[in-house]
Image (cartoon, helix red, strand yellow):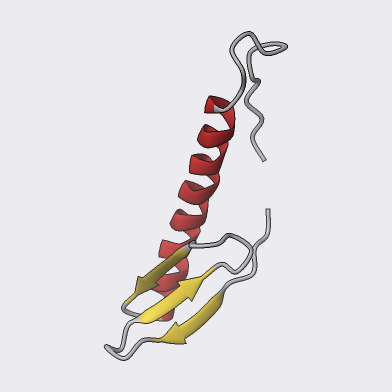
Length: 71
């Protein structure tokens, strides 16, 4: 999957990386490379957390067990 991110410099000099498509998905780094690496990890964690919330909201005895699909 491909996500767009924004980079900005915080007052303390750190680079803040945000993924606008995923509300609250923000990270930072000492430089652009670190910020991008960190937001990539944050995107993965954000998507995993949303998936876990969705699976836990399934009603008991739903049609079948969820199947894991990697993208």
